[in-house]
Image (cartoon, rainbow, N blue to C red; front, side):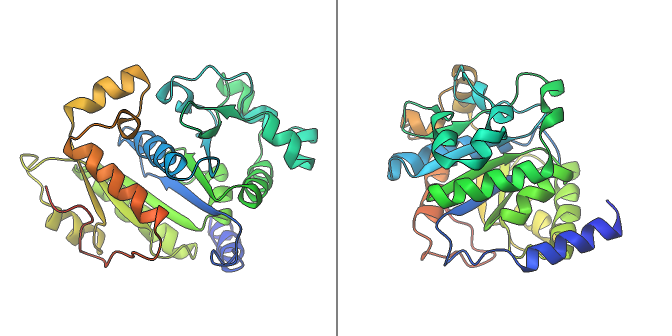
Amino acid sequence: MSTSVLAATAADASQRRDPAASRGRVVSVLSPKGGVGKTTVATNLAVGLAKAAPGSTVLVDLDVQFGDVASALNLAPQHSLADMVGDAASRDAMVLKTLLTQHETGLHVICGVDSPAAADGVTADDVSRLLATLAAEFRYVVVDTAPGLLEHTLAVLDQTTDPLLVTSMDVPGVRGLRKELETLDALGVGSPFIALNLTDRHSGMSVADVEATIGTGVDLLLPRSRALAASVNLGVPLIQSGGRDVMTKRLRVLVDHYAAPQRQNRRGRHLGGRR
């Protein structure tokens, strides 16, 4: 990423909307690499918010080339991201709403494209306009981004009010998280919420090790879960199925954090407790 791109994006970030005055919060789920459970976190968060306040939430799959939100929610969408940035939809919020896919929980969804080639026509400017329109129509806009910080994700950050970083409890994931935090700081994106996924006391790494490496506290610990594999394969998010396992309980804590913004977490005090 060039210095000029960082500088330009940081300037845009300085003008980002005040979330208190905004009509909607844009929660962007980010990760430094793939395979850390980012989509799992995004889909469960979005479903939880939609259940808490019907009609309030839209989930956007902005892993532009390889998004799998549709699979995670067992959806067969008639329209995809490419349709949402067409002329009619980009000009008229009412048209845009007619193209959204409806999930059985009441969640509205913009699913990813069918193939990487179909994503070629989706530009960063398209992404910015789409998210701005959605934020004017919905209380919560949850965005599942591609791993890393490529052009489309930078456009997402320009509209983001609540960055949520997800990584796994392993050396590559934690080192990647540190680099991403440093980059976000350079972009003017302050105080991301940090969720450490796939935590395991037998991994050879402690939460204290992670926090020492990244230079800040972790907000939420999400443990390994046997129920998660079945959830992913069935396309039914854990928070939808109403399980009582630890992972589902922690995901509910995450939903509560955004549904009740007055309950702020103090850095280094893990929401939901340790594992």
